[in-house]
Amino acid sequence: MHDLKTPIAIIEAGINSLINTKDKEEQLSQRQQKTLARLLRNVKNAKNLVNDILEVGRSSEGIINNRRCLLCELLLPSIVEIIDLTDNTASERIRVCEDMDALIMELSKKDILLTMDQTLWRKEVYLDPRKINQIFRNLISNAIKYRKKTIEIHIDIKKSKDHSENLIVSVKDDGEGIEKIYHKKIFESYFQIEDEREDCVRGHGLGLAGILILIEDMGGRMYLESGEGKGAKFSVTLPLGVCSID
Ligand SMILES: Nc1ncnc2c1ncn2[C@@H]1O[C@H](COP(=O)(O)OP(=O)(O)OP(=O)(O)O)[C@@H](O)[C@H]1O
Ligand SMILES: [Mg+2]
Image (cartoon, rainbow, N blue to C red; front, top):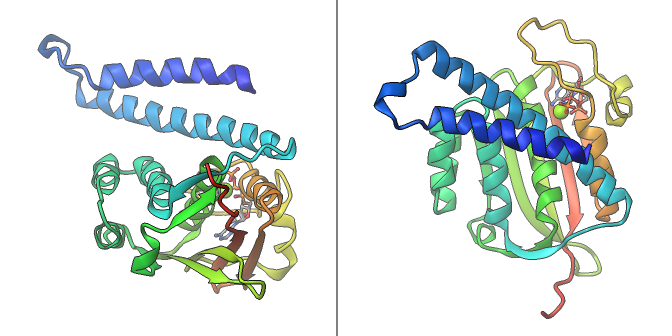
């Protein structure tokens, strides 16, 4: 799996250099630009898939690279990556959001409703950024894939009985929902519910199984609330590691 990283990086760099060509003589036609944009989207998906599988392997080996970072530094890159797959002008606007209100406004244009307390935007946490990115990305992209119109992301920090802090992330969509009989199955690798929608891009059935491993290895939990026709809400609770003094 690791050997796939180099060829993917080379393909991505090649596509980017063609897209960003400044030479007037070499201007691309609209059809070429469209094709390259599609290639880039697919290569980014392939890169994410490889990185996600490698991260699950690292996690199973007990490797957790916690570091001090701000909550906004964890949230923004995952959202940028997701939006970038469908709309790279919107993702550019999101990339430069400097505060929570700006991000909330940009996301609402995409029917993504973000709610979190203002004080959490620059809250310092001690977590593994790669794992958090994978968790956010998988939950949000599923919700976008299955929604009818909107998704809601809620972020919070709550104290447990022993006063330790937990990060709570919930991602809710207004899609068809998930029947009770599948509530366990969807967390198994390669399991996908039969989907009749023609426009649907098939994944691999690895997303939820992968992030469940990451979440449990980080000492957290994932819950699903959903019923047929009622949308789906995935909630993740992660203990915020105690920050060691560097
Ligand atoms: N928000 C959701 N609404 C309805 N069904 C969902 C939702 N999220 C996941 N599912 C169901 O659970 C299955 C497993 O999800 P999972 O994220 O593991 O795989 P995937 O999205 O199909 O592929 P991958 O994540 O590997 O690209 C999905 O195929 C789908 O049937
Ligand atoms: Mg998925």
